[in-house]
Amino acid sequence: MLMFLARRLLQLLPTLFFVSVIIFGLQQLLPGDPALAMAGEERDPAVLDQIRRQYNLDQPIYLQYFYWIGGILTGNLGESMRLKESVFTLIAQKFPVTLQLALMAIVVSLSVGVTAGIISAVYKNTRLDYAVNVLALTGISTPNFWLGIMLIFLFSVHLGWLPASGYVSPFEDFWMSMKTTILPAFVLGNSFAAVLMRHTRSAMLAAMTSDYVRTARAKGLAERIVVLKHAMRNALTPVITLGALELGTLLSGAVLTEQVFSIPGFGKLIVDSVFNRDYAVVQGVTLVTATTYILLNLAADIAYVLVNPRLRE
Image (cartoon, rainbow, N blue to C red; front, top):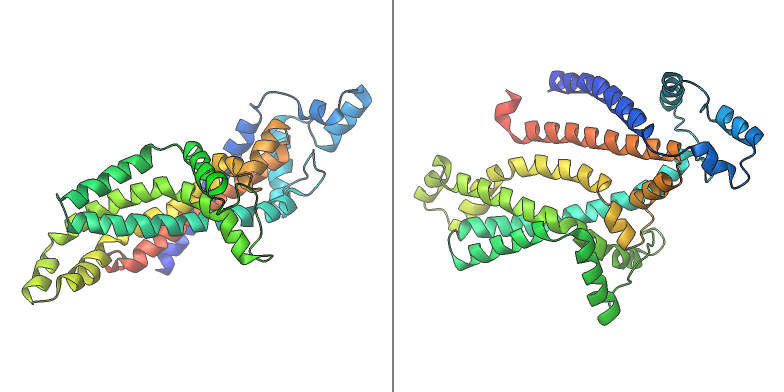
């Protein structure tokens, strides 16, 4: 296990290097000059020169990359050109918001998707199975922004049960935080719940026809024990990997949802930074998101090995 972990950690180093190169290289393709955006309307040549020197924009691209990566290795992600704040401080403020939203979305996805997948497999080719599959197809096909607007109209405007937008930290008011994040969490978790349902159904159908399940039934065990203890435990092994990877996707894919619900998380931060040509923030947020995704991929591999004894051998 330790050798496996050591090999996976060594594989992360070149991956992170190539990710950083891609992030920095694609950043240079964005149109516009950040120095012009910072200088304001007057655009004094002396001010432009001073800004370019301050942020190393007058240096060749490869030197700009080395300055940037050198700062990252020392814990310095740079400074926001627009807000004049440390990028690390901005990320520390916004990341918990998106993380809370992603974790709540994962809980919604696992609760709905796994349960629906098991029910669909147990009641294969029945009306209940067909109904669950129709709901799953609907969940995959529904755009997040449209679903978010419809939920706001129903639960906020029409019924008045939940706030339409905004965010409250759980450390300030836990229940209000739940109220402000339950709708966007459901929107984010909706499509993944549908994907999770299909994966769980396929895995359960394969497990239900396996030899160990037939043996358990031959012993006279109750169907509930056969399904939940024997079939489900083995069928959920790939679901663990899928869930860990999807958490990384939710962290990076909450842009539209955060915009619809006006949640000040990673999505809103990176959209504002792109429009304002705030290169340092865009690079910092993208790098942190990519690194988180890579680490979650590592966690998924470790969890898969821990759950599956055959891989440990």
